[in-house]
Amino acid sequence: MNGDLDDRPPSPIFEIGLPSLTCYALLISFFSAARDGANIIIAAKTTSANPKLEGTIYSAAVEIERAGGKALAVPCDVRDYSQIEKAVELGVEKFGGIDIVVNNASAIHLTGTLKTSPKTYDLMNQVNARGTFRFTLANIPYLSMFSAQVPTW
Image (cartoon, rainbow, N blue to C red; front, side, top):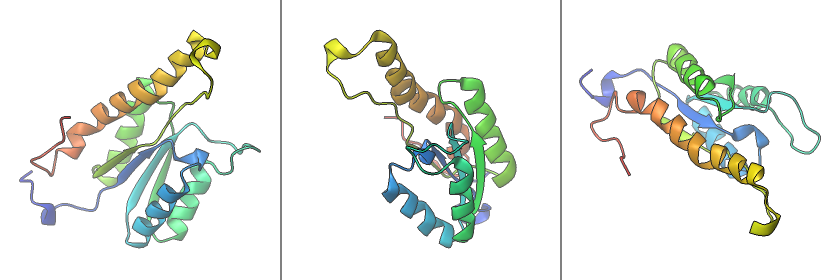
């Protein structure tokens, strides 16, 4: 591949963690991108409705498609690297590449240090730090296919 942006087919925005729908502004951005014909992969754990959190990866995909984009909903726990690899593989297979990765998955426990168990602390780090790192790492080969510059912060 020569890196020329004009030669490539449209490829997707890859988002993890969206279906909690706590980041409504991000959803609005995706709907705006969908109106412009974006392909959006939603990889997250929320596959069934929860009375406390509206929406699932499937309902988000329906809304993106209703707005004019194409969506792929992939169940994915970011603590499991094999699920991350599968989500990336399915996205690349369906859309031909990845343009943007939005790491939005998070685990939070709003207590002080003395009230936070090691198990809870480990969960937050597995999702917030390690999950983000592993998801980004899995996508870098596809992000760099069409660009000479890949952030290496």
